[in-house]
Amino acid sequence: MLELIVFLCGGVVMILELTGSRILAPYLGTSIVVWTSLIGIILASLSIGYWYGGKLADRNPSDRSLSAIILISAVLVAAITLLKEPVLDWLQSTVASFSVNAILATIILFAPPSIALGMVSPYAVRLRMQDLRTSGSTVGRLYAISTVGSIAGTFLAGFYLIAYFGSTKILLVLAGALLLTSALACARGFMAVRAVLLVFLVLMFVVADVNEQRQKQQGIYSVETRYSHVKVYPSVDETSGRRTRAMVTNPKETQSAMYLDDPADLVLRYTRFYRLIHHFRPDTQTALMIGGAGFSYPKNYLASFSHARLDVVEIDPDFTRLAREHFMLREDARLTVYHEDGRTYLNRTTAKYDAIFGDAFSSFYSVPYQLTTLETVRRIYHALNDNGVVLMNIISSIEGETGQFLRAQVATFKSVFPQVYLFPVGNPEDVEGVQNIMLVALKSPAPPSFRNENPEMNRYLSHLWKKPVADDMPILTDDHAPVDAYMLKVIRTL
Image (cartoon, rainbow, N blue to C red):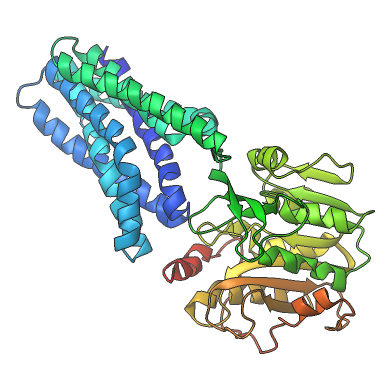
């Protein structure tokens, strides 16, 4: 029975860690800072648990005490469902440092149950150990079984649980599993505590289900995918008063939006700057877009270029499903969607395009560094036809520390493309303000015009950055691309 107990507790640890990333994501994103905080704090907590569990086991080991430890861990896991929102809201309003925020959130929410779970294995070893001559094999066997449980929990969470259940329900299931495991360790005692916890778990599960149904009736959908936490909700455009539907995947950011009265019209200002393709390559016939999300610009592109084809590479198939269900993405013979990483697609494709649009950097919380490097830019260059154009959205400032990522990206593109231009979407005169910036790279060395007969194009072209961009940042490579370090400086200004 002890083997089963350490297996189950080992699995719970890893499921808790992976679920923790989804709990933090709506408030802190999924950057390497968040993952470092989660992994580091949980490892430290397990170490404390190993130490204290072993110390406790040497005093007066019993099945009842082991059961109590597991029951305490069940209570602590269940408590996260009540604490997560008030704790994260409080930290965001009181702690200015992003890194400190991530560390404190992990300590408060996940350290206590991790310490309790860490106590289980050394305590189980002490209960199992009957003969010092076989102590080594006993320790090795139980810790191996615990590790196998952690491996199983990792795959179960990553491949199934997170993709199909919300984080609250996963926590409740984990607490329930620990409650049963506590009974396996010792069925006697703690009956009142177990009964109260069981009732709490059932009620919380019902409440979570009722809240989910109520939100759906209000047009709000909260979805856990394999890659992110996604929220779809109704809204109103403050400028025009038109009703919209929005998609959010990171804190303080709207990933996609759609006007309900015209699904192909563009709500978010930065997406309108992709229409500069009408100026730089008005005869485009084939295009690639890396990053689909709610498919805002792909719909506009297909409506604007009636005979053109568009390939969209979107790593998350659930984004495409949500776009079809909530953002009026229709089947179109001219549209092909590939569900894979943009870099792997560029590595293998032999297709040639007139234009390549990049919208995978639409979050400063988690920039996919593999799409920023020299090796990627070279593949983009080779995937373009002659006179091909790249339009890439970047969130950054131009000067100062918060502009380091942009300047590194400009240096990387300039090492491959003969012409690179910037169009700040917000204030074209703001040098240190963080904003969306459209990077335009031309494969042709022929200087373009920056005037157009179309007033809309002229509005976008008037945002051209005419000053030199400082050449003070290194070219990004697969070997060294400190994108997270650059973006952390942006996050600290928020």
